Image (cartoon, rainbow, N blue to C red; front, side, top):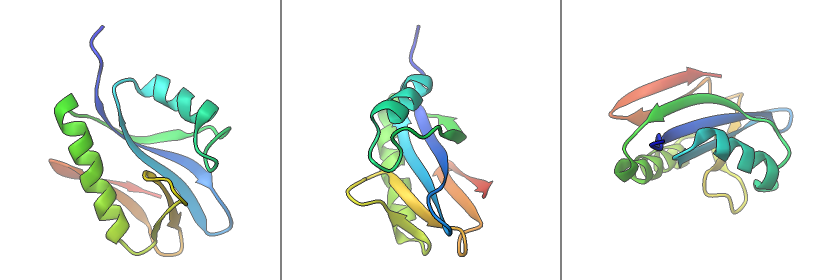
Amino acid sequence: MKKQYGIYVIDYGMYDEFYRLYKLGETGNLEQRLHQHEEKGNKFIKGKTGNVILWRPVSQYNTKRYEDKNRAIWDSLEGFQRCYRCKDTFLVDTRIVTEIAITIKKTYAVAL
């Protein structure tokens, strides 16, 4: 079976009163990756069940490029804060941010 590479955004729910936890990543097997996060993820997401809010297939060659590009965009936006030492897990301030956008050829917006 051929792998389906792509970019994903997973919502792990409320982290505290004002912040929601999101994971941005790329994978060739989304179901397996979700299981890995739940079992062995960083301290912010380990043991939590995530909800995939965006999945877009992308060629294997382009997955890392798009992930890095979107991570840089999120870093520059107000209301997005990377979790301690986590390169792709973000705390999103729900008082400021009303939707999350991912750009892969075109922009996909997901309301919070």
